[in-house]
Length: 127
Image 1: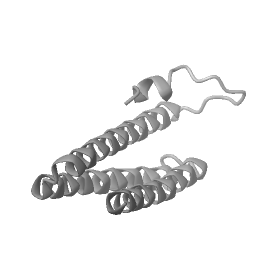
Image 2: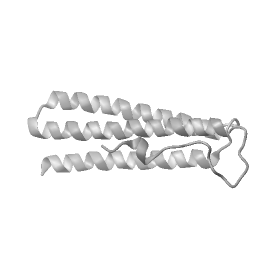
Image 3: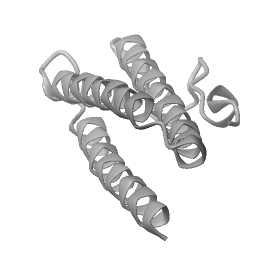
């Protein structure tokens, strides 16, 4: 897996054409937290893919079921954290509806990606 941090990062100072608000460090910190959650998701996908490959070779049902349980907990935790961040962006402390909407859109895409990934694995295992 390629290094996620090399693909996406937030570096300060941010260059903008608009004046920087006093609360921008809070926004940057929250966006960094979001990127950390996305890193965890990427790692979970890599672990799931690897575990599925091992399952297809060995047929070990119990280890694969345990892995799936761990991955489910990880994805649920990631989703809860992003929903919390979305809520924070909507709060008066941040008032960043644009970023809240962006996080919501990412959540929807992540849900679709997970569904498609699992569908692909089920179809691939029955072929």
